[in-house]
Length: 92
Image (tube, rainbow, N blue to C red):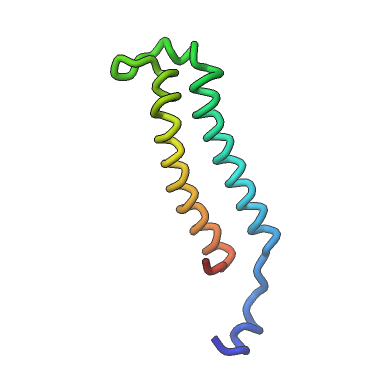
């Protein structure tokens, strides 16, 4: 890229970028907290009224569900970060 192309490019909105990254991170951490601690411990008694494969739902979340949701959140985080970086024209 030549200097003239760099000079004419619009400046990157760093503040907006970090605002979106922090919002995404906090939202995903809240979902992970609700899935692992909330469903596995706080709401376990309510969820145990439902069975999945013979196991109570609260137990299932504590043993398997929180891990599945964590892996899904990792893939979503990658997808969302790529979208945010394209939006702010940041090359990773």
